[in-house]
Amino acid sequence: MSTQTAAQIFVAAYVPLWIVPRVVAILGANPSTIRFRSPRPTLVMFLWAFCLCLATASGNRSMQSGELPYLRSVWLGALLLVVSLVLSVESLRHLRQYYALEIEVKMDHRVIASGPYRFVRHPIYISDLLGYIGVCLLASTWFTWVALPLFVIALQMMIRREEQILISVLGDEYLIYKQSTRTGLIPRPPFLRAGTKRDDQS
Image (tube, rainbow, N blue to C red; front, top):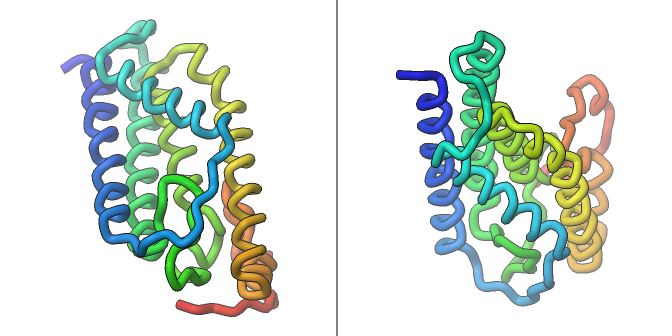
């Protein structure tokens, strides 16, 4: 099996494994009481990332397979896809009935501070970012990397909008949680969290 074929298999497997847990979470989620429109750039960049995954899986890439640097890139990309899926599933398992694709306030909504949410406020977005970087490594094309900063900006816009809404809805409960965690894209080392007050609800 060629390196190019292996890259295609990794991405082809990643796409359904990314979708299925989210569909299961949505089906088991509480009804929403308030629904907000997500920032348009975020939706565009998520669509871009999804189309990129499909293009990579179908072999629409320009690279020289068989070279050692590309072989290393493929295995590193595959590792990031695995980490992305594990983090995504674990985050969805703890978020459970409060998951939504867009920005929604669910019935009986509360702060989740267990599992990955002990360390970062948006671990699902971290998993998406890791997955996108993994696809970039597997695709080995310049245009995937050009879009990476835009993808990060889009995620930050989504995070900022979500947190504004959560503060307005959950008030002090979310503010206390926010003080003890990072925004989401880079986890805070444990020694930097020492002595921080938190309201752990796990």
